[in-house]
Length: 106
Image 1: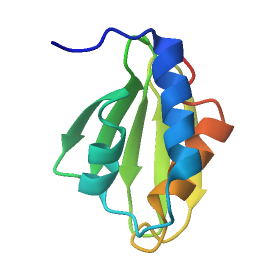
Image 2 (image 1 turned 30 degrees about the vertical axis):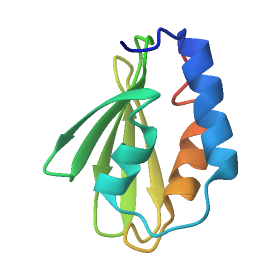
Image 3 (image 1 turned 30 degrees about the horizontal axis):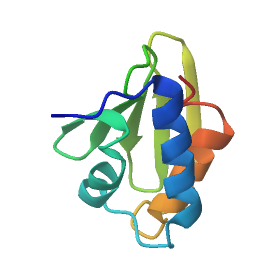
C-alpha cells in the first residue's frame, strides 16, 4: 500500500533529500531513481525527462544536450537554459537549480 502525501509534503521531502545528497556525476537514470518517490517521472531514452511533483499539476521537461540542460515548464511558455557539462554536473546541482527557480513548486 502506497503512502498518500500531499504535493507540499512531497515537495518538502524532495528539498530535504537535496540537502542531504552528496555531489555525484549526473546520470539521467540515477537522477530519476533518486527523485521517483516524490515525483512522477517519465523519460524518452534518457535524453528528455518529464518530471512533476506527485499531486501537482505543473511539471518540467528536461532536455539533455551536449553542454546544457533545456528546462521547459509544462503548460507554460517558459524555457530555462542551464549551461554546463551534463556529464560532469551533479544531480544535486541540477535539483538545486530547479528548486531555486521554483520549477518544481506544487
